[in-house]
Amino acid sequence: MSNAIQDYFEGKIDFVGQQRVDEIARIWLFSFTALSFALGFALHSLKTSFMLLGSSTVVLCAIVLPAWPMYNKHPVKWLPALKPSGGETNKGE
Image 1 (spheres, rainbow, N blue to C red):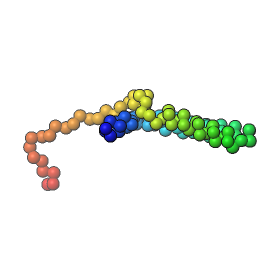
Image 2 (cartoon, helix red, strand yellow):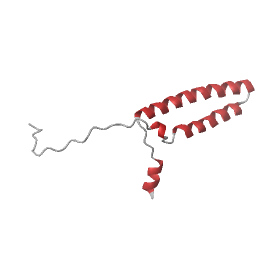
Image 3 (tube, rainbow, N blue to C red):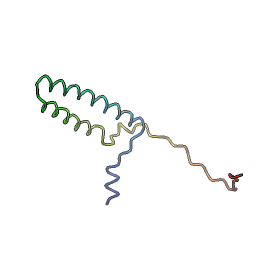
Image 4 (cartoon, one colour):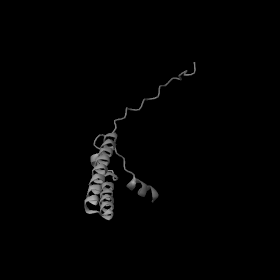
């Protein structure tokens, strides 16, 4: 049962997808931090500022945490496995 749960929650994304998630998170957090500060400052409301920043962080988590297919468009291409040779090798000599 635990393997099924682990397989469900384990998300594998490629390196390009990781870079895309990093860019989205940085831009999103910077933008909404500035927006929530400006809105909270304009309305003189710390509650508004924190509510906007908190809700935007929840939406960001829904965007970047699951392993969406758009984050796995460039899978890593591994080299084929080498076939073992029949003879012994002298690596130490």
